[in-house]
Length: 207
Image 1 (cartoon, one colour):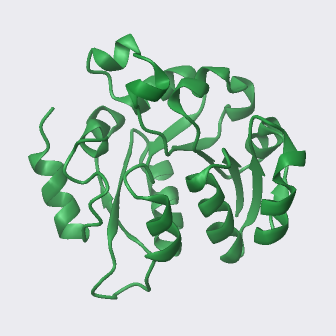
Image 2: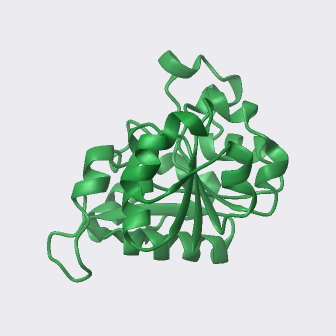
């Protein structure tokens, strides 16, 4: 599968290394340009590119950037792509975003800015170090699970399959309107639960 990665911080770099190691064609990008990604690309066996190049021809694009940077992304490059929103809203970093402060899930806000893309919320509730180190084979009793939310069932299934490749079980977390349940300060955020624990955490989450 051709995978685009937008963002080269801890999550983006971790996804680049893990997905390339699994045999995917990985194209990684950031806002500073491909020349700044030479070391990561060489280490992972990935290709460094511009954001437009990483997104335009990808089967799935993972976006792992500060939320405040989403409006600066080249919208046309994401049209008709499956986009995994790995981001979280942190007012101290992103500034206060009125719609989100008013209760709009951050992934719905992302989908509004990336009109034409199919947005899936995932990979936002796990620590970067755990993303790289805690993946385990299917059936392992210590395997943890990640919630996945989207309004599109086929896109959700595609992303779930990739997460399973990474060594994690998945839990259907509903639609983007439900994705607040996996945001910061919710029970499943950073908690490394198994599938049953994720289901329970999503169910008891309160705004």
